[in-house]
Length: 110
Image 1: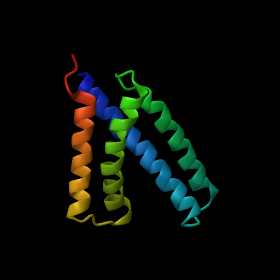
Image 2: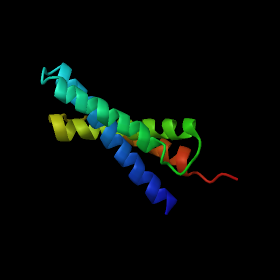
Image 3: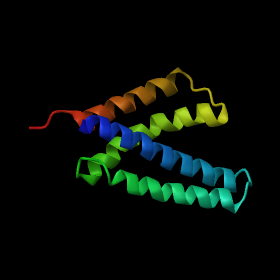
Image 4: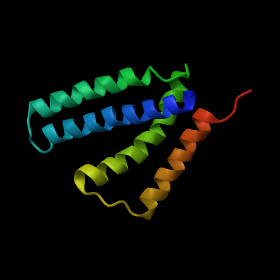
């Protein structure tokens, strides 16, 4: 059950971090205003909190593994929110990153 919990927390963290960064981007780069940027800052803060809920106690491991989730999630966010069309190398790179997540987080340790 802790693997499922961990995966859910990674997905939630990605939603907050990628969504928060996107909101800041929209507020500043797309000139939608400070409300958008402020909402992004709040979401980014929530991301930091969610990361602390991971069952593993090692900050470096959590953040390293989350990096792979961030890469894949960012591409997916771009597809959904911005109409981005990843090419095959984007997809291959994201899959490599997700394999890294599995190795870092869920490999058996003795």
